[in-house]
Structure formats: C-alpha cells, structure tokens
Image 1 (cartoon, rainbow, N blue to C red):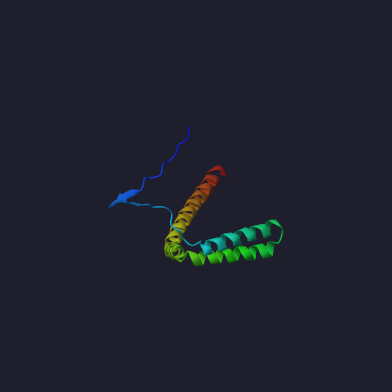
Image 2 (image 1 turned 90 degrees about the vertical axis):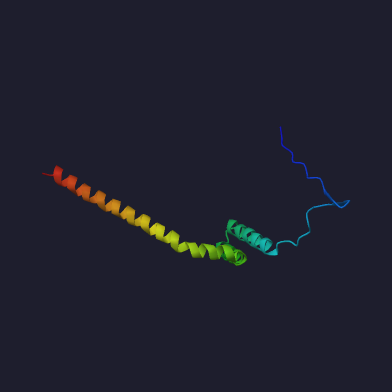
Length: 113
C-alpha cells in the first residue's frame, strides 16, 4: 500500500485565489557545468585516457570549490581543530605502543632467566 501526498488547496485571500506553484528559476549553470565535467572526466577515465580524465576531473573539482566558497571557508577554519584532535589521538596511540613495548621487554626478561 503506497502513500500519496495531496497538494495543499490554494489559499483564498480577499476573494481571489492565490496559487502557490513552482516559480520559474533559471537553471543552475555552475551545477550543470560541474556535473558535466565530472561526467566527462569519468568517461575519459573509463575509456583509458587517464591524464585527460584526471585533468577534466580536477577542473570540475576546482569549479565545484569556487561555487561552494562558504563551505570551503568553514572547512578551512575547522581543519586545525580536526588536526589537533588527530595529533592527540596519535599521541595516545604512541603512548600505548610504548607502554606495550616496555611490558613486552619486562616479560621477556622474566622468561629468559
């Protein structure tokens, strides 16, 4: 059994119906260009033209980054926090590895007597 949504009836304001339908917007040319470039790059990669495919895909990535300036700026500003967190995690892992190595040497010393 499927679920069907029904459109909302038009709202009546001062005796006249106000129809709220989709407005005509211009196409997103940047999005179409980026999508087409990614598609062309992937087709070139599939056809075996690796250098051309990588070049077109890199261009598409650059266009995508230009289109999403605010998102890139947010990521750039939060990147140091993530790097600090990763460094802290690596420091903890290094401490654990050093601790295990010391315990291994202690056990070897006990069994080699």
